[in-house]
Image (cartoon, rainbow, N blue to C red; front, side, top):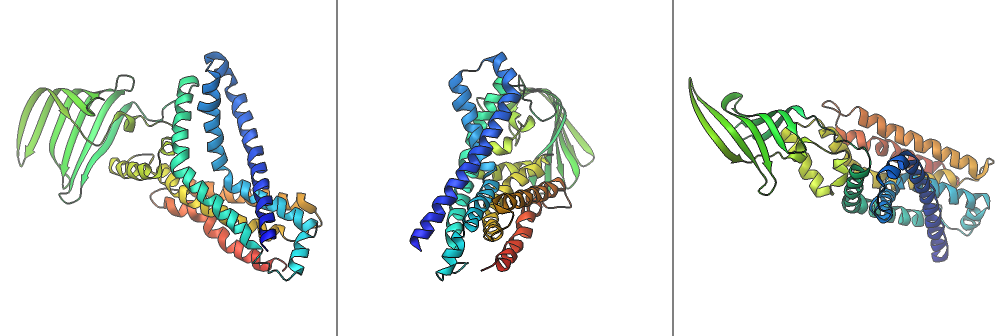
Length: 363
């Protein structure tokens, strides 16, 4: 069986990279057509365009479409083997149908581990560099408000203390906030309120410089008022947390993303659900790759009158259903619908389907 295993693994990898190459070429062409006017206008250096942008874009999309490409690759080469009666010949030697699944699982698990490593540690860095290129040469915008910014920056459950920051306006180019206030609540009661005409971010020391400050401290029925011309302060909020760039979660490796989600939970961020979806997909997508490998093997091992084209069509349909389930789940993520459940719904549904199809397949 070692020769047959090697043959299947070889065919699997060839089919997978062929599918991946086709998908990547299409996405690159579509992206180039969409951005060609900006590139002609801004004239980025060729080496920066190729290695700083499109190489990173290829890595991003190759990793994104890997589960679907694996699925279609399994169907493509397995259905060919079935049509040529190769599978019948192998099974006729006494080889178990389930034993024949082993080389498929070897490749599927290998690709799943590679995908997990890429998504968690390699692709984020590449995505960060790609997005920097896009901000430089295309009209890409940041995705947070510059007015009426309200964030929770401190939560201490032991003392029941919460601190909120409010900015009337934030100038992203100068990193300056106007109409700044910071309010401290203990057990729901306001105990201190700091107001400043201006707050300037000092990047060298990672602190805010406050100017024209008025501090009100409330102790029972009494109130103390203090005025300070200038002071430095720090809290769990920087300019990068006010103006969040598009796809910011995709530019962080997994440990940084987990830490960022924790901070955004404290702040009560409006993008918290999107961040959680990104986090859980880094674990669910590699598992999906393995499940789709099993399904592809089960449905393409049968010799079909419609040939390879029919089985590929069935594979495309199943891929569409899988993506639709994933999108539908993430759309309903909110306070009443957990992000982890939403992301894992396709795998939860497709795993028993994969086992059922294996049992149903002719042996």
